[in-house]
Length: 192
Image (cartoon, rainbow, N blue to C red; front, side, top):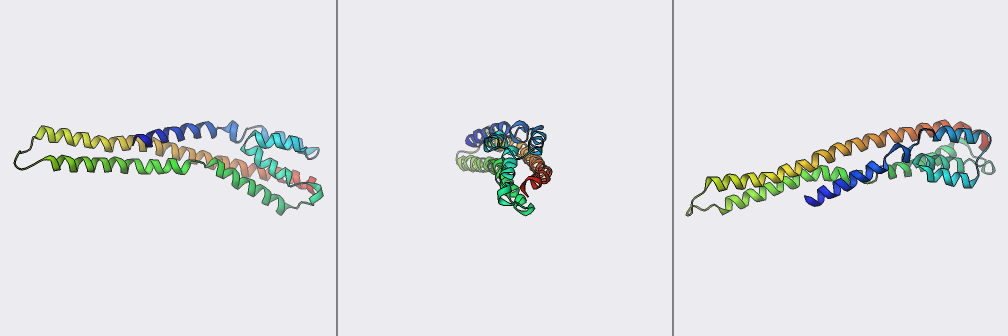
């Protein structure tokens, strides 16, 4: 349970740091790229900087790279380039979310397992010859129930952050798709 709590905290901090708008889809980036592509396709050096800028930058750079006039790029090829880059971007955005979801699901079960094992030990320690001490029994049950509470203390925030990050990723995926759709007509003018 302690390992689950440490892992959940580490995953939450990592995702909070890497699912920021500035790292995924900076607000002004698309407008800058649209302005840049109006006069022609940018150089490889500019595309490298764009790809390193953010997740959105990497998707846009992949589309621009595939729009070279020498290839005679058509709309289907451009869409395929954007989709491939988009799939890689979505995979990067969803990193560690399954692990966080697993911790959110498993923590209450681990707590329940600890409670059941504790209850078995408590009732196993009671013997008919020595009698039972109600105070010791009550204390043992309360200690066993702490396992369930600790499991829930781990699971509830993990599940809340998992859902929050899932919503962030879905919003970013929509942003990436809309940005690619806006850039596509500009690239078709230069690629044909």
